[in-house]
Image 1 (cartoon, rainbow, N blue to C red):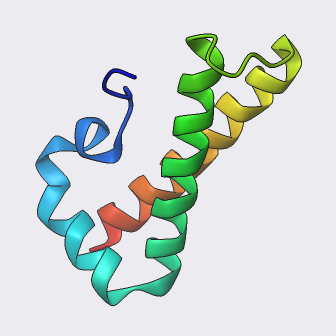
Image 2 (image 1 turned 90 degrees about the vertical axis):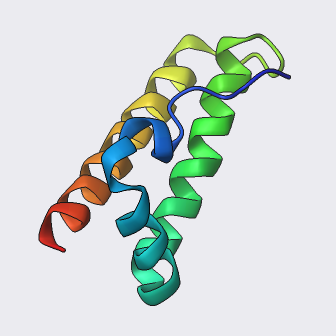
Length: 79
């Protein structure tokens, strides 16, 4: 499989250091980042047809990814 788009380091390229620091020092952020990674991987697999899902399921996964990304962005902005 090729590079999975929308990884956190691509979504927040200027925040790479903050992301690393928060993953190490903040258990809640680390859990959010891991959950984002898992959902993002699932969305990518659905989009590429590796693991097809119903359109509604894929839409819900995208919404969850967006919600996680928003929460991560809020935490990054607070640091």
